[in-house]
Length: 163
Image (tube, rainbow, N blue to C red; front, top):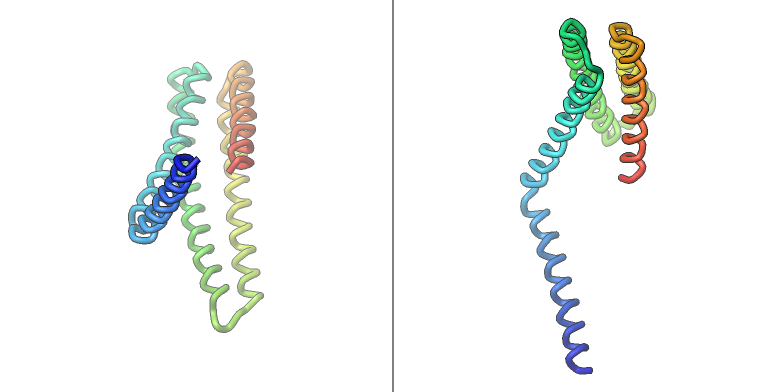
């Protein structure tokens, strides 16, 4: 009986010390946390490129189709990067407005509207981009393309649901 009580007490002490140690590491090393977050973001971007490469492989494209789609993809990625940078900038403006001494609800609403407009523009450009790609494909390739995007959407919704 004494051995089990001592064992349980020892287990709780070890758990407490390890939790405290982890918390100290996080507060003492914010640069490491930032680096880990940056690494996760890069992996996410690589996943997007991986998504593109998987799709290209599944479609059995001709060399002309590959070149055309790659050109469209690069142009679209440039536009998306610009929009994402603008959205980040607007989010920063929004944070400044939220903590300002002179709170201005109209200014906050305007920035929120600008963010929404940028996000809507991005979504419209993505839809247009997908349609442009579809137009370069044969009927069989279009079916594969559409199925790939339907499955990708399901996977993304599932991932977002489980976060």
